Length: 108
Image 1 (cartoon, rainbow, N blue to C red):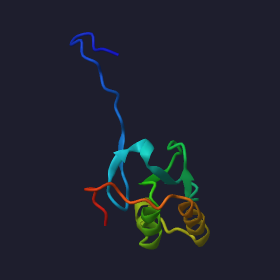
Image 2: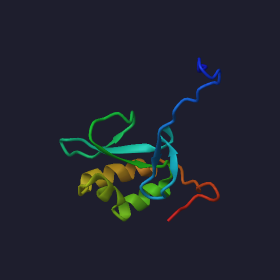
Image 3: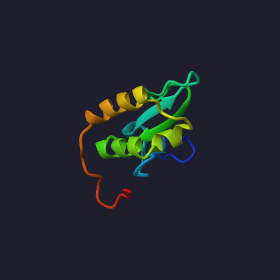
Image 4: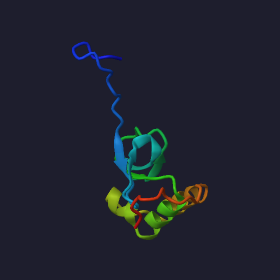
């Protein structure tokens, strides 16, 4: 689509989010969202549209393992994850690929 005044093409806005562990700033669709809805049950949000407080993690198993171990998700969601929620998220993390981050990206 072109801008009528300038004749230049408009670029589509891409929302960016930050992984709570490695702090990579990536497009929202490249990250996975964990949400704490008003009822308090922490769950994975595949659509990224559920109401509630959300935290984003990249698709690396190492980030998920560290987020659960160091309680980064607990802090980001302003809650304390229960054993059931933690084990459910850990089971999901086990299904993720164990890939290395691209060179030059900060990893803690």
